[in-house]
Amino acid sequence: MIALPGGTFTMGSERFYPEEAPVRRVRVDPFRIDAAPVTNRAFARFVA
Image 1: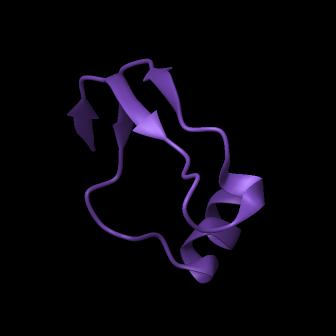
Image 2: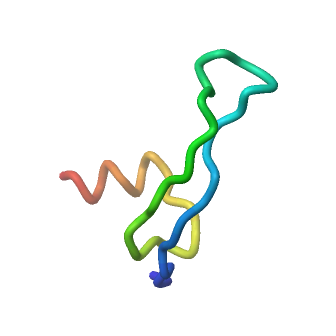
């Protein structure tokens, strides 16, 4: 797993689909994520 520091970013758009509006600043807490994709089969093994 790799650690991502989190931070703020601009989310949304007012130029494409209405459901993407409004443009806003969002904060994401730090988190860890797998470095490689997880397949449905691998996730099913994890759940089992």
